[in-house]
Length: 393
Ligand SMILES: *Cc1c(COP(=O)(O)O)cnc(C)c1O
Image (tube, rainbow, N blue to C red):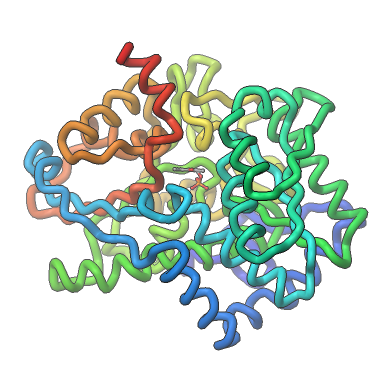
C-alpha cells in the first residue's frame, strides 16, 4: 500500500490526466521525461545549489518553546516563511524552471489568483533570464495590486483574463489555451499539486525537500526522524505534500491537513473541500471538488487567498478518502486569532494560510510527549492589511 502516485498519476481513484487532446503532446513530453531529468545528477546538483544559495535552504526546524508550553506538547515549526519570496512556493518554481531548461523551453507561462505563484514564477524567470507571461483574472489584478507590481518589476508580462468571472479559473483557461498554441517553446509552471499527471507528482517531489530536511533536523534535535504528527494547511496542497512526502507510507506518523472553513463549513462561503467536495474533474485531474448537484464548480471563499480554491490535489483526496490523513477545517475568525497568538508568543507573524494550521491547537489536544511539526508555509507580510482590518490595529 502506498500513498504516492502510480505510473499513470493515480492516488487511489484520484488523479490521472483528463485533458483536451490538443494538450496531449505537451503533458506527454513532460510525463516521459520528468523522472529521468529529476534523477539526473547534474539536475539534482543545480537544484540543490539554488535551494541553498538562492532560496536560503535548509530552512530551520525551530522548537517553539512558548507555544509548546501553552498547549502542553512539543511543537516544532518548519520555517518555510524564511524562504526567498516568503513562502514554500519558490521550491517548486526553481525546480520547474530547471526542468523547462532541460526540455529546451525558452518561454514560461503561469496562472495566478492572489499573485503569490505569479511572483514565485516571475522571480525564477528573472533569475534565468527567460520570458514570462502570467495570466491573471481582471478582478484579481485589481484586488492584488502589490503582487502585480512585483511581477512587473521582475520583468514578467501580466495578461488579464477578461472572460467569465475574471478570476483564477478564467486565468487557467487562458494559460491552457496559450500552451496549446505554443507547444514547442513554452513550459507551463503549475503552482501546486494539482493539474494533469505528471504535475501533482512532479510538484510533490520538488516540495519534498521540506520533509527530507525535517527528517535529519528532527534526528539532530530529538534523536528520531519521525514526528508523531505533521500538520499543514491545504489550498491545492503543495506545502502539505512536501511536508508529508517522506512520511506518507509510514503509519507511525500522523498526517493532519487543515482546510479553510471560511465563514463556516455549511455557510455557503467556505473552501472546505474534504467536507463538502464530491468527485469531479478540475484542472485536468480527477479529485474532490466543491460543486453544485449538476456538477458546476462552486465559487470558494476564504479570508486567505492561498486557500481559496474549490478543489484539492489528488494526493489529498486519497489521504482523506482512505483515512490516512486527519482533515480539520478552520474558520476565518479562528485562523486570524491563531495568527495573532503565534505573533505574540513566538515573534513570528504567519501568513493567514498558515494561521489555519496553528488554529487546530485550540481544538485538537496532543499528548505532552508528542512531537508535533507544523509546516510554517509562509510569512504574514503580504497579509498585513487583512490583519489590520480584522483586529482594527
Ligand atoms: C499558496 C500558499 C498556500 C497554499 O498552497 P498549497 O499549494 O496548498 O501549499 C499556503 N500557504 C502559503 C503561505 C501560500 O503562499
